Image 1: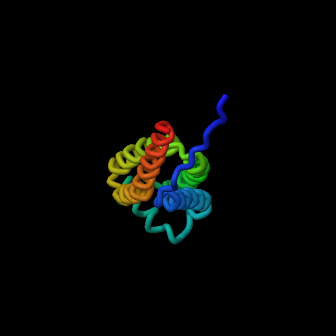
Image 2: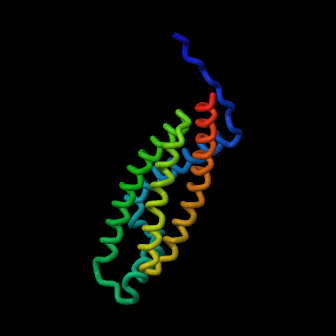
Length: 161
């Protein structure tokens, strides 16, 4: 029986920076998710709340809408912080094991989320949310596609060896 051969792959020059960027994105999601429940009713967000109320209700905002809105934003924060842990796990597995499947799942999740979120926002003419979604797509999708491509190429090199 032959001993297993160790294959050393050269590190792609962009890979470490892209992974660090993705960990930053994960940390940003975690921090924002943890802060949203605390800051949802913050007076500095008054303009944002008015913007949302106008998009849904126009000038005739029913009483109690603000408290429901703050409640939903707080729930969203809890969801985002939980989601950041799953994102972090996938980034870790992709980084550690150079597995393009981890990057694929993150890409698929973003491609599932973004069109739905934009469509829902556009139904109420909430362009501010669409702009946030576009910024999130630009922050996450190109680095993930690069990481997928880099690790996929290296996986092919291992398979050919």
